[in-house]
Amino acid sequence: MGYLLFVTLIQAFSFSLIGVYLAGHVDSYFAVLFRVLLAGLVFIPLTRWRRVEAPFMRGMLLIGALQFGVTYVCLYLSFRVLTVPEVLLFTILTPLHVTLIEDALNRRFNPWGLLAALVAVLGAVIIRYDRVDPDFLGGFLLLQLANFTYAAGQVLYKHLVARYPGDMPHYRRFGYFYLGALAVALPAFLLFGNAQRLPDAPDQWGVLLFLGLCSTALGMYWWNKGACLVNGATLAVMNNLHVPVGLLINLLIWGQNEDLGKLFSGALVIVLSVWISRRGLVERRAAA
Image (cartoon, rainbow, N blue to C red; front, side):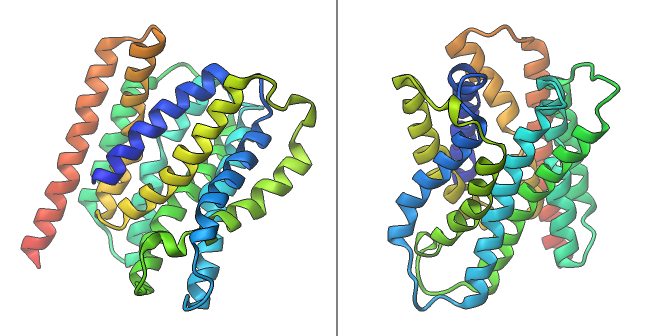
């Protein structure tokens, strides 16, 4: 779980950086493309092109296209029809997608995992709930596609590595992920991007460098590696932990006003969901 916790801190810090330095100033599709290119420059030189099973390569291309490419394209498109509170509210459903996909791939139903995911969603709702505009169905469905592809990517990676364990470190086979992401990010920028809104300040380039190297390169790699080390229920819960952490960072560093009572209450509920997921694992092992 250490990898997931560390990436949660990176993600939480990244959201604030995007909101302060990039949102409304830098074209979103360029930011996504730049992040993929920079992460690819880190991992592709380390990637083994031989002695890697062809099905594993194809699987990694698909996972990269889903977990980063499609997810971020849908996320940015959703901002055209949804407000920020609505986007934040609807992204908390990711744990449900993780749990359902994990159970579907394992051909079983895990009530503990589903309960943990629902409790995690409740915790995030307590923190981020705001009134939503009634005309949001299209944006809601678009964002659920983003949630689904992000969840599918991490669950599929976990199963792909289990099926093709190989005899080399994870990072030697992770470059294919960014090639798959690039296959979506580049056309998205060409179709929807605005070349007139490229970064024009040093701090914007600095934030993009951080996002590319830390959030996209190390973050995506460590998150997927960490996903292989925990059960599906815990993975589902960890997908919502960035909400209280992100709000706390936003409060301490940028001084944004947040309801500390809601933050603390929601964080306690999410911690409870982690305990439920671990309790379910103990019960399943005892039954076996």
